[in-house]
Image 1 (cartoon, rainbow, N blue to C red):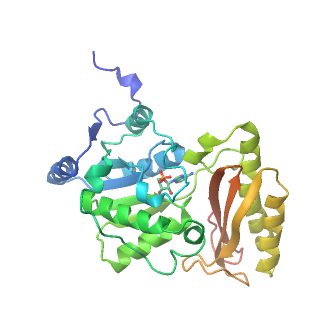
Image 2: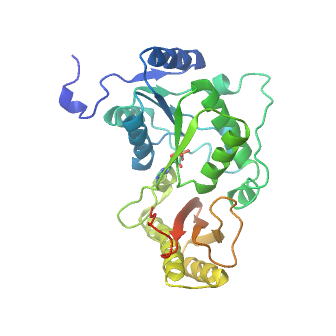
Image 3: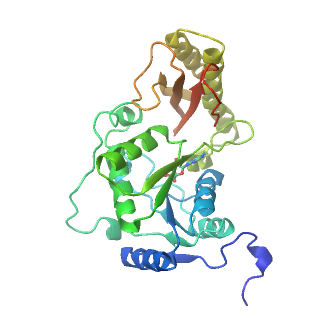
Length: 304
Ligand code: AMP
């Protein structure tokens, strides 16, 4: 019996699940023949409201919305959590259906990296700092898979979260440098009510660890408050962030920084627009977060 309409409160009645490049291409071709704009949201699955906010934004602008789910082995380093990364396809499909996604592409590793695969995409410089410094090779894995997905889907627009701040900077740079026609769109970080940025890795946290994890967003808010109130020494801001994190049980800091929003260069003096970034481990779970900071003299305010 077909499911009742009430089971699917939002638009998509029919969600396709495909596993091959040929099937995605065929579906995109058909959507274009119908005159629809195509949007894609690349993910590693274990979807939460952060991912779904991207799909919802894509839905608002595009007639045909694709979510890709691929836990990309080449962006995990040795000893990282590739094996235990949460995989929950049925739940992800239900979530995609709820927000009106049209097609979910779940390729196998062999579909993405067939025998003989040898190419790496590297955005130089900004890929070696912050996350790149802590996770050697990570961004080359990210930019390679993202370029592949963009080439496979050939969407009008692709949607990324500012939660992975450095990643979206790199992806925009790569697409500019390599004349990728897909427009890169970014959306603000979705948080729990208490400030914790949603992350698939939050699933690893028990109650106490989750409490400790709140220190990341608290440190970022502290940085923003200090800067907005007129602190002129970025070093003092970094120090305060570090102290807050180091005073939290179970937390080990990888980096704290206040950086230029595009070059990601660490600042010594405040700029009208900056980004505060943090990476820390809560026991064995590594978390990242960031907060754009706009000084009050600049018009408007961007909070995420
Ligand atoms: P992932 O599955 O972790 O690779 O993330 C897929 C996409 O979702 C990336 O563009 C992330 O930046 C984005 N994303 C992850 N968490 C959030 C969040 N809390 N808010 C907004 N976007 C997010």
